[in-house]
Image 1 (cartoon, rainbow, N blue to C red):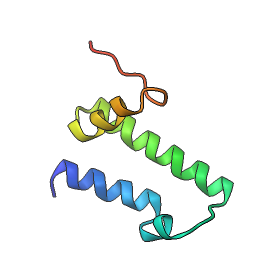
Image 2: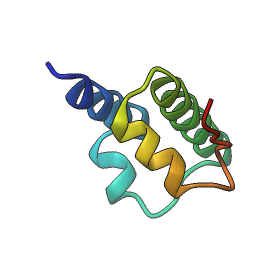
Image 3: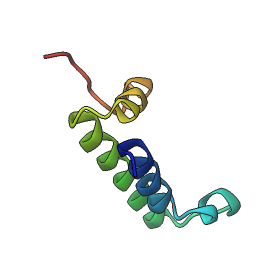
Image 4: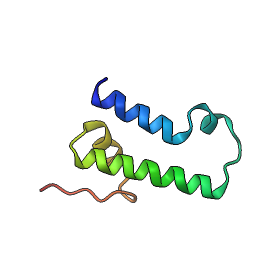
Length: 69
């Protein structure tokens, strides 16, 4: 499994698969857990140099601070 496929697999697992896309209401605590899980997954993988995660972080500048070192 490539790193991008592994990243997407974990991303979908955090969302809860189809349930996230098919439900019309999400409990607030569940939503916070999803947001926290996705933010951590994106940040960790972007910091490790995964291009897909870096792309997402760059597209969400209010959620992720990115800087070149």
